Image (cartoon, rainbow, N blue to C red; front, side, top):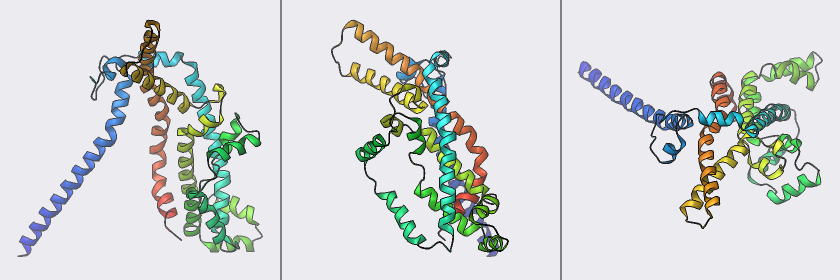
Length: 307
């Protein structure tokens, strides 16, 4: 009887493991296919890609798209701006979020529950786009890099995660001992709390960094000078040109011969470089993420548990 039960258990475990592996394999295919497709399309003939001839591997491999990108100066201007916005903006995000989260985690902070409610209201309600635009205009920040760096300085979600991490991962007794030794609040945070918070700091850096890297909507509203545009805004422009040209030709809109040739050339150029730009824009985050992944379990899982 025992041997039969053991054999049934082994069979059930084997079936369960097989189902799990199949599901994981399907998920891997679903997630990897778009990445491989975009990478292959960036090396393929744009007409073959637009015609649906390419499914996974490159067709008529060519580096023409990347050669054109090297000559497209605005792409590199956008790249430099995006790197600046990401680095400077992320540092400002951390400088505003971590001290605030630490203050909200302190047991001796009076009224912290009401302050937390005040912060959480901003997650669900905002003044709206037009009042926000008028506010930025009245402050004289339109078409400046400052509006990009200041906008979204503190994320309430990240604030809650960091606050919970400080509450659950750093013993209160350490802070009490520091007070007895004569440390003030700034010394406690700078010399004790912050050095012990490497995991949550890395997680917050990645969250804010990815958000800054992918941002384009705020820049589209508040920036007019193309020399200040981020990479994502130029990518959006390229994709819009490609879509407009296709839609205009598909709808049978009336154009002169010169206009039609210009549209065809615009569509071909956009198709030739858009996948290359997507690869270049996603590559830094894909390279950085594996090195920071090890901090996620320690940072996010602890910080996401209510305390």
